[in-house]
Image (cartoon, rainbow, N blue to C red; front, side, top):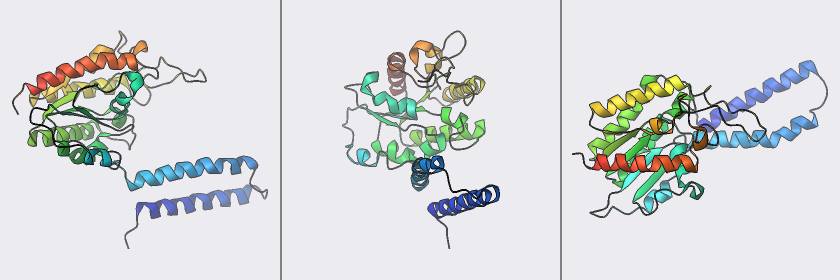
Length: 271
């Protein structure tokens, strides 16, 4: 009988709690402490999130209803879909100026996503919306290992496949560089936020170089956010981010006109 992800999760939990119970029995005969009990709600919440993620790993449900409400584009409409992770997703925040007010642009970013997750939902969240162009910003979470350790070639293959699918459907492709990261910022407790550990700058630069070359070799448009937001240390400028990873309002103010220029250039190209 085929085992579902949820069943695997339940088995793993039984093993985990069985091991914990065995260890406690060997080391102590005392009843669970109040601290252990207090941690149970948080543990259950984490397990619920994990189970939900297993049920819809690429998060295809995120934009399901929104996609159904999107009408076919008008003949003269220059619809553009932005496919990406949290840097795209957060662009909708009004505190960051909103997502291109008045423009027929569609935001399909999902925080934390990697390129294989985007590739799975590319048909529903991009192709089915019939845009004139797509802006793809992806790869930083792959480098961070959000869905497991991967090779540079794996990331490149997924980006290339999305670009190929778009071209097959007559959609112009804009491939955006990853933003640099920095370790300048601090959290609420005053502790330094170390972004370069999970996202080594050398790996970001290498992927950007590949994206730039791939775009040039295949007639796509390269959108260079990186050069505009880096400082003299090749880090994300302090004033453009509040956590060393995501753009803030000032960061999006720099990125928006660059995106517009790239989209304009892409739309002038032949399909």
